[in-house]
Amino acid sequence: MSDTHWLFSYGSNSPSRLAGRLQRAHLDMVAAWAPGWQRAFRGESRVWGGGVATLERVRGATTYGYCARVNEDDLRLLDRYEGVPSGVYLRERVLVETHDGPLTAVTYLHTSSKFNPPSREYLETIAATVGAFWAGPDGRPVRPDDFPLR
Image (tube, rainbow, N blue to C red):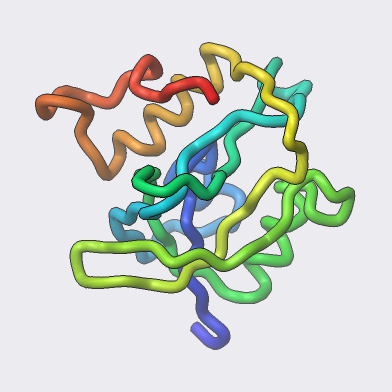
């Protein structure tokens, strides 16, 4: 794949949702975490009925998710899904860690600074995204209550 990038997903863009959006049967994916970033909920989504995930820089914080290998065409398509043309999200680069070492990854950051609590359905979707690669505390499955509302 030419012009490849790693995409860091930490919210509702689960592996199956991402594969569906990109119309791919298989994506190269790895567990990843973003040190120095915390998940926060901003803006208003009519689809999800509340705030949606973004990342904020916070010393000592870590946000868990995964990285998928994508190309430039994929990113242009995802920009539309994420609302980049209308200014809802910005595409940014962040340093993430994997079990094989650090990666520079593309991710999407919400432009709103206004906190808005997410819906339970949205938190359940994030739990499924994160839980595809990570366990919750004490090795149990990831649950919606594992995500502090900030």
